Image (tube, rainbow, N blue to C red; front, side, top):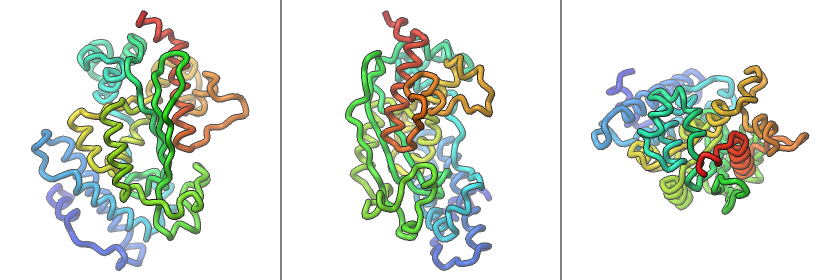
Length: 323
């Protein structure tokens, strides 16, 4: 598929409800997801203000693909990886996140980290946090942002200095199509049931929540564990998010990257022990007690993440660098 074909496909008038056989649904989903990837890549690569189309075209095609997946059966796609979930943030995004967190310039952090962020571990410990961060976590019905729905979001704010706690925490549920009353996808992970979602407005339709989130993201560094996941989902679900990200109005801080780079205990463990998961990292730092488990609910995970980052920074004497 060429970019011109992707634009034509995204602008085409399609009624997914008329596609009832697996072959047609599979082909439509494949073409949708290929087009979303092509369009998003072209939009990000174009100079700001000179994009060949609005990012709204990408979001609208993702909306259309979710309807196709609903017809197909999103649970059937659980073991099939899509192409529109980023595995990690770019080195440039990671450097920008540290710069925002510490109140430093991008160039200053890049001087330590290197253009490829190879030595970003040094930058993480070179200065203490200078900004209140917004911890954020979502629960979804799919791994892939163009296939499923955001059904829970949790957020809290925290000055990461020693002795502080998260504050102004908030959690909210969002609705999904009624066909999932029989079973919410991925409920075995997040334990969210239809009773939690019944009568709730879907995230894509909750314009008040979207406006509030976008305003907060513009004001505070957004910290998430594996922030590429939240970033991928927000691009395709939150109106205006990708546009603000491209203009440098939103900074992301990946707590999983902090764990990977500066937690020496985790680096000594084998990969199959999954040392960089929030649950395992929190156990090593004592913010999750023996016998406790990660809740996999937005607000609970946000608090656990913030306390664990704080504990890691204390252990690595990050705060002493500001004295």
